Amino acid sequence: MSDLIGRTALVTGAASGIGAACAVALAARGAQVTVADVNELGAKSVAADIGGQAWAVDLLEVGALASLSLEVDILVNNAGVQTVSPLEDFPPERFRVIQTLMVEAPFLLIRAALPHMYAKGFGRIINVSSVHGLRASPFKVAYVTAKHALEGLSKVTALEGGPHGVTSNCVNPGYVRTPLVDKQIADQATAHGIPEQEVIEKVLLTESAIKRLIEPAEVANLVAWLAADEAGMVTGASYVMDGGWSAR
Image (spheres, rainbow, N blue to C red):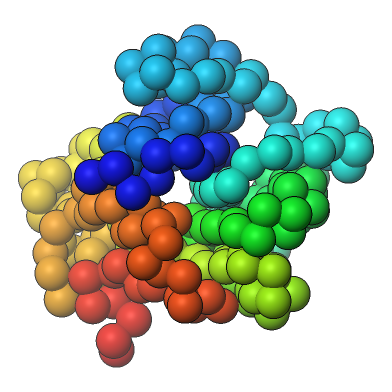
C-alpha cells in the first residue's frame, strides 16, 4: 500500500516492540518516519531498516519539549514504561516519572505538532494506550493512572483538532509480545514452576477470551489505518485490541 506517500510521521519509543512495528508499518505505506527513542543505537538501527531518520531523545527532559516545533503529519505517542508494586509501597518518584513520560510528554509533543497540522489542514494523532486505559488492575497504579489520563488528552485533542482536519485516537491493546513481556513470562514460569504457555493463559490472559499474546504488527496495522485518509471520520475513539478482556 502507498496511501501515506508524502506524509511525515514521528513515532516515540520506536527502537523496539510496538513502536518499531509502527515505524515499519507507516514506512511500508510510504510515510517518511522519524524513529524517536532514548536508545540511540536502537533508533538508528530501525531508521536504517526503513529508510527513515533517528531522533535520540529523552522524553523525560520536558523542559526541552516545551519550546519544540514539530513539522510532522502523523504523531504516534508510544513511549512507555511499567512498574508493578502495591500502592502503599509504590515509590512516589517513580509515579511522577511515569506520569511525565506517558502523559506530559505526549501533551507537549501534541502541542508542538498541532500548528503544522492545522496549517496543512491534516493531522493524525495516535496514542498507544492500553486496555489499562479503560480498565484497572492491582499493583499498576502509575501505569493505569497515566493511560487513563492519555485517554482524556486524546479526546480533548480530537475535539479541538476536528475543525482543522486533525484526528486523535487511542489504540488499546492487551498484552503484546514484546521483549519486556517475554521476560515476564519466563520469570513467572520459573517462579511458579509451570510452563510458559500456562503462564500466558492462566496468569497474563485470565480475562481474555483469546488465549494468545498480541503481535506488535497487529497493533501497528491498526495504527497505520488510523493514519490514513480513509480514517478521516474516526476521531475521539479508543480502539480496543484485547482478545475480549474488556467485554467482561
